[in-house]
Image (cartoon, rainbow, N blue to C red; front, top):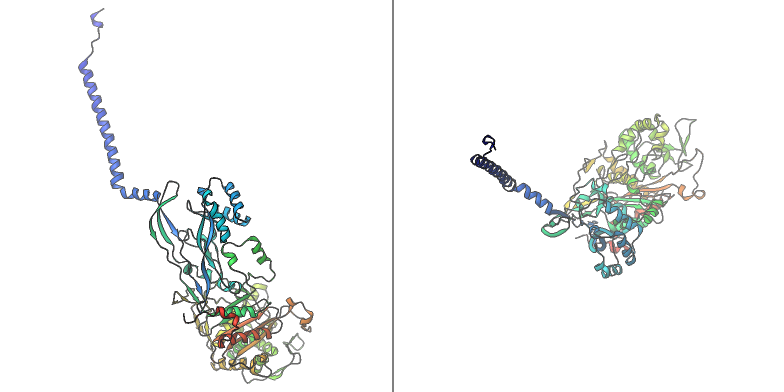
Length: 626
């Protein structure tokens, strides 16, 4: 082989190359280690608090504990809304392997309705924290509790929980005033703090319960718990106890409320009693009522259908939403308006025929007394309730002065401080009729309003609060339910203020109107003379509201009409007349004669002022000194 073609290995060169490679690899590894150490330092030292918080968020969960709901009392300490313990059958879905099998087993142990299963299935679809129980059947009987307890060991995910639930001990007579709580819905959660209500089952829906929800609910407790990767609670780390809801003491008198409800008998209607010195509602009755306890745990479809389909409309709050013609109960206010604007005087005489005509050849507006009343003055028009006097007075005034004056007494507007859902009724005006009917206001429209008929509509609470202002000589209190909250005076913040003064040009007209209304009872021709003989003076005014319009020469004959076409019977009154302690409005729907609400009102006055209640109401007496 030729020498020039021989290859010789350069070991020194290879050694240098290997060294360079080792050094490069070492530097590379060092840099990687340095980067790794730097990253670990950044994560574990610089960002320690941040990642520790994130780790805790995965490991630690805040769970709210619903507070005990505040209680509701009447003015004498009678509990009207209570909390009582019950045992409920609950399910933790995450612990149930086969829900269909569980349903079969449970149904063989205890009776569970289709409605209860439907509610459970809906609750499954709503947001909740992992391992939070869902109530399947509430208020287990002792027998049902025993049956379930025997088989609990083989029912994974099933437990019996002790819970506090709302209870209304006096039922339907108080339903429209106190209201009720019901199950929280997704719509309810849109209006409250979701975290605070997490785990809560109920929320106030109507009445006092609804208006004072935040006050009665209190503040939820916060429990810090440790959970596993699946969200199951493993241990409790820290606990902040819930703050119970505040207790409400109402102006409401439980005995007066129940007595008024019973005195309505089998009639539908409403009674509202107010303390003229405070505006406090002593009774707020709408009959028929309903059992509010049905709604607490979720009313059944059957029970709800019965209430909705009843022709007597038990779910309708007549006291707040019932629209009625005030009829002749409006006459004291109309008379004061005439005096205020110079369209009437106490001394002016008027010859009251059996009818009134705007024009000589026009329609005859009939008086309730077909033969007429002869020569009368303003006081006599109140005593005998002379329709024709108010026909001519309203025609002289026109609707604008009437509207402006009655507005000062709360007609045609909302006036309740702490109840929602009231109707504003209707106090008509020129502008209203043009907007509604595209027609001008006619003199005949004013004539009808003059006796509380025609377009005018008012609610019982409006008429009652106007009567209270009359009793208080123009001191108008916006009516309210709550007197104290946890022993402190209730405060209201809705822009209305608590009260206002109705100032007359001649303040003596307050006393003169009270005297005229006293003679409605004491005078031999007074329309409420049947109430004479009390130990105290009553100022009152009767009224009968037409349900349908009569033809010009048609006479009203109750004996030939179906009861639903009978006139509504109304009465307003306050007593003692000179220093009133209570004012009342009562209406019997289709009651016909105003003697019914007048008698009811006297019995309420006797009960409240003289403590003359039938003994069967002693259970509601309470202790006013507490």
